Amino acid sequence: MNGNCHFVYGASVATALSMNMDKLSAIIPTLAVSPENITLFIFGGLIGGIFPDLDNPTSYVGKLSSPLSKLFGVLGTTSGKTGANHRGILHDPLVYLVGLFLCCQHFTPLIGFFIGCLSHLFLDMFNPAGVPFLFGVKHLHLMKIPSGSRESVIFTWLNVVLVLVVGFVLQLNLFPLT
Image 1 (cartoon, rainbow, N blue to C red):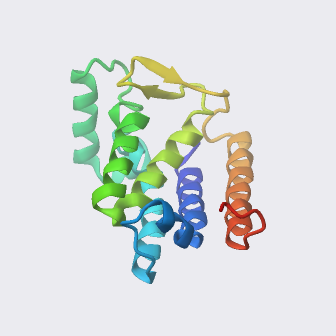
Image 2: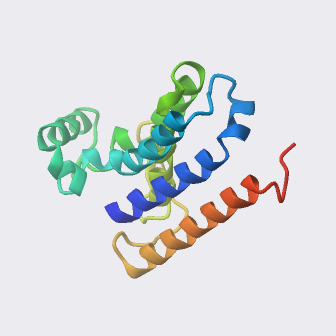
């Protein structure tokens, strides 16, 4: 998927969750329902949706942060990643799952960011390269939709609609969770 797909999907996932922040606060007691946290959730989803591509010097976010992107490339090379440095440690779901867990416990304003990062990895699992797991020991991929293809854009928009519909359904209590 391209950067636009990741950006839109990260924002939609964070929006669907922020629409239901009252329900999330029942699960995450440290999460306060406030306009500030809702804004941070959505903004975090936007940024998190493109953040994992920081390890790709040719991506939009990689070009904007060239020195940092190159640093992640060097770190990827030193940890055994060969060839293109993309899909290194910044594409490992374990990193973001640990971050999300820690944020739920100690710093809830960053939850949206980690949700956005995980949304990025979800879309990348449908790419032929997949995503590395356990620091590259395994690669997870579910389909082989090429990045930037018409199919990837359609797939992303179908997921955006699905996520927002689920968010509205939960918000309207059409299928109550409790």
